[in-house]
Length: 478
Image 1 (cartoon, rainbow, N blue to C red):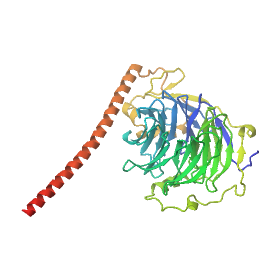
Image 2 (cartoon, rainbow, N blue to C red):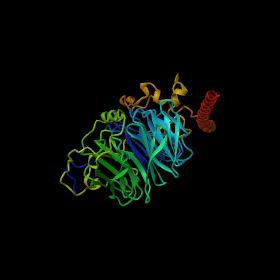
Image 3 (cartoon, one colour):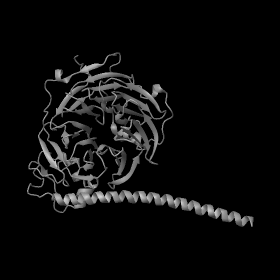
Image 4 (cartoon, helix red, strand yellow):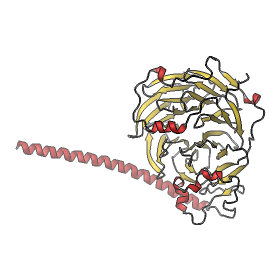
């Protein structure tokens, strides 16, 4: 079926990864797209025509998730190598590494204010990290199987997580307790996320379903069975009116949440689709899958000012009163009103001449990685640059290291350190990694002991107060 001019269109596709795409995310500045892949690399694509792409080398196994910080000055990635990395998204690609979990890490997610990072792992835990100090903050343990995804609510007060134990849990970030639990006897959720105003969650089910839950009334609002295979990822349009889904059946589908129906089926990929994401303003979305292609689509939806949405959500101090089901989403006119059938779009048949799909790729080797390759550009510290600042605190670096450098001749790589620089010896790196691991274990142990000591002190204080009360009572009687 031929698509009308107002339908979503495939604008561009990027080729550079050598294996399946696992995650995509747009830079809030609207000029870049980050992707993660089974090939162990992250890639940063610039939308400017003919601009170079950057391939970040550092992870030692599949990269499972990638996300920009709210300001766009940091890029977080999770991997099956059990680590989380923070990258400066520019041509130097400086990074720091967290020995985050004892099993593969499945997802990363920044809070809307950029102060915290949530990570989910196959070690059955969710961990929250303080981004200012770049250190472990606390863990959430209640899942009994692998945790596949964890996301902050827009106001940062809640975290939603999904696990192969067939539950979706809501956590209070203030008291670190599980405050709600949704269970499914049929399948488990591969992915879960809050809608833009934080009142609902959407889950992508292994049982081929997409579900919308209202967390204020603990009720299943909508249940879609539009895919023929497991659903791997969902993404809300910033308006909250639309949801896009990615499935192993090879299709993307766009749901109209106002009318509760499927409006588009997109067939751009050849094979399972693993990830999809709207841009921060909602005018674009990107998808990736087993075919190792990254597709960039333009929507026919109204653009939303994402900064206004973030400000509104951060100012929310309490949940709204329980809603009427018809008022869950803003009631705005739909551009395809009157058309009840879903539109199928197959760009392989309709799009003949796309923009350049394979831009020049520059490999950027992470400083702390022992990997050595003739084709990669080394990024060792320059003279006068503090080692600790270089490695541990990319978020606190001077503005010259931030993405604005991309404006200054992104294709000119002559200012990078030369190939004659030597990387850190592998034995030293392994020894340092082992020491860091042991320090991390000690830090967690001390944290637990501090909590227990605090509890003991509180109980002792209560005992002394009770003892004083008893003494006073005895003295009064005598």
